[in-house]
Length: 68
Image (cartoon, rainbow, N blue to C red; front, side, top):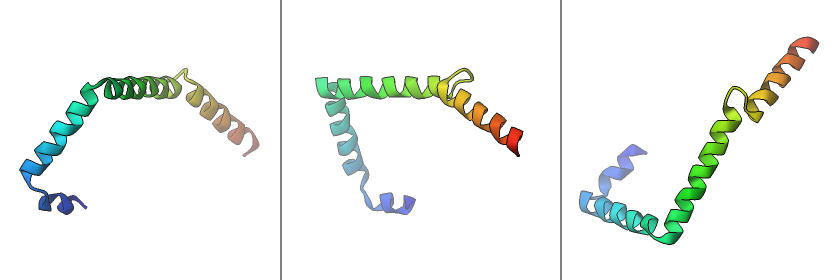
Protein backbone atom coordinates (compact mmCIF):
# COMPACT_ATOMS: atom_id res chain seq x y z
CA UNK A 1 0.00 0.00 0.00
CA UNK A 2 2.85 2.38 0.68
CA UNK A 3 3.60 2.46 -3.04
CA UNK A 4 0.21 4.07 -3.64
CA UNK A 5 1.50 7.29 -2.12
CA UNK A 6 4.32 7.44 -4.64
CA UNK A 7 1.84 8.55 -7.31
CA UNK A 8 0.84 11.61 -5.27
CA UNK A 9 3.04 14.55 -5.98
CA UNK A 10 4.78 16.35 -3.13
CA UNK A 11 3.04 19.65 -3.86
CA UNK A 12 -0.36 17.96 -3.63
CA UNK A 13 0.54 16.33 -0.30
CA UNK A 14 1.70 19.68 1.08
CA UNK A 15 -1.61 21.23 0.01
CA UNK A 16 -3.53 18.52 1.87
CA UNK A 17 -1.34 19.01 4.95
CA UNK A 18 -1.92 22.78 4.90
CA UNK A 19 -5.67 22.42 4.55
CA UNK A 20 -5.92 19.90 7.38
CA UNK A 21 -3.84 22.22 9.57
CA UNK A 22 -6.18 25.16 8.80
CA UNK A 23 -9.26 23.09 9.67
CA UNK A 24 -7.68 21.96 12.93
CA UNK A 25 -6.92 25.56 13.88
CA UNK A 26 -10.59 26.55 13.63
CA UNK A 27 -12.94 26.24 16.58
CA UNK A 28 -14.40 22.93 15.36
CA UNK A 29 -10.94 21.54 14.82
CA UNK A 30 -9.86 22.63 18.27
CA UNK A 31 -12.92 20.95 19.78
CA UNK A 32 -12.15 17.76 17.84
CA UNK A 33 -8.58 17.85 19.09
CA UNK A 34 -9.72 18.39 22.70
CA UNK A 35 -12.12 15.44 22.46
CA UNK A 36 -9.40 13.29 20.95
CA UNK A 37 -7.05 14.16 23.80
CA UNK A 38 -9.80 13.37 26.33
CA UNK A 39 -10.35 9.93 24.79
CA UNK A 40 -6.60 9.35 24.69
CA UNK A 41 -6.37 10.15 28.41
CA UNK A 42 -9.31 7.86 29.22
CA UNK A 43 -7.74 5.02 27.23
CA UNK A 44 -4.41 5.49 28.99
CA UNK A 45 -6.12 5.54 32.40
CA UNK A 46 -8.17 2.44 31.62
CA UNK A 47 -5.12 0.46 30.54
CA UNK A 48 -2.88 1.69 33.35
CA UNK A 49 -1.95 -0.81 36.08
CA UNK A 50 -4.82 0.34 38.32
CA UNK A 51 -7.16 1.15 35.43
CA UNK A 52 -10.54 -0.48 34.86
CA UNK A 53 -9.52 -2.47 31.77
CA UNK A 54 -6.37 -3.71 33.47
CA UNK A 55 -8.28 -4.75 36.60
CA UNK A 56 -10.98 -6.51 34.60
CA UNK A 57 -8.40 -8.40 32.55
CA UNK A 58 -6.53 -9.34 35.72
CA UNK A 59 -9.76 -10.72 37.25
CA UNK A 60 -10.46 -12.66 34.05
CA UNK A 61 -7.00 -14.24 34.03
CA UNK A 62 -7.22 -15.13 37.72
CA UNK A 63 -10.63 -16.75 37.23
CA UNK A 64 -9.40 -18.66 34.18
CA UNK A 65 -6.49 -20.14 36.14
CA UNK A 66 -8.74 -21.06 39.08
CA UNK A 67 -10.96 -23.13 36.81
CA UNK A 68 -8.28 -24.19 34.33
